[in-house]
Length: 114
Length: 111
Image (cartoon, helix red, strand yellow):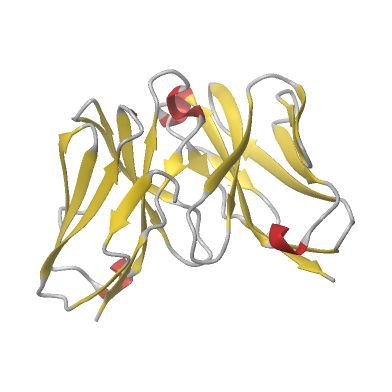
């Protein structure tokens, strides 16, 4: 356990479904991130939240909708996804003192879109 | 934009020393990090370099040369459990100081 918990660990959904990924940390970190990890590709930054405010949206399609109700929780709402969205979605957090020098990642949510 | 290059795969035997290189292109370099990820697991932080030179943490060391836009991760006394993917990540002004990751290097340690 890293201190960052992601649920569900595995998710299979159809292109017309709506689902959500959840990320939770109680490390006292102020920043939270969503990254997408596809085979043979670098981790792709999707969104960054700092003290609940979105500070980065890396040109992510609107079918991915993030929500950060507080500094400990981060959601990624999914709707009308495409098969190419199948990937491992990683949540990370970082503390206020070291900033983004050190990210703590969750184990990821493995998403399969049929 | 930013880009990082690292080898896709490295193989070595137990007890050996292996070096994983990372070259980067970025504007406003701030720091270089290394992460380890086992299959099915979370990436975990290994080391961070902001200044030139070598940082040592147990069996792992990380080196940075800002003038060469180059760094490496050195793993000594390799163990089977070191088989994993290793990612370098750069923080830079050009990327709003958010870590940008390389494609990762798969390290395979043989007995």
